Image 1 (cartoon, one colour):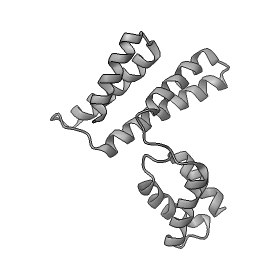
Image 2: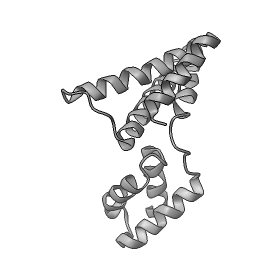
Image 3: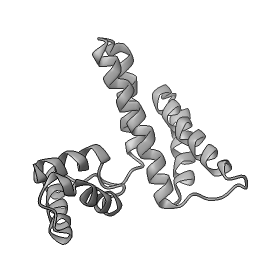
Length: 149
């Protein structure tokens, strides 16, 4: 089932349940998909990779907003953002655990021959491609720094 089909089913369920947070989140996803499809001119289907990048972008935006709200002691605004993160994350593939992430990065480091922080760019490039959708870029970066540092 494509992301759009799954999204429409969830949207109908949220409407029936009168779940305002879910509706807002799902409509945001739908809006981003439509914008991405019409961006190139002609309406075209998104690839699975493009869908994952789009969903990750939405999750990151909401996490960033929530952290800013928390810094400003506005829990009332942070809570809905984090609730939306949970709903949007349902459509993402299962995220890797920290241990699995470090094992994959260690394997990449041995393939590339990375030994110091100078090699971080090489490792990040390969890791980002290999772990697309499976791990957040920030988590990958943190793990690479820990292993190289």
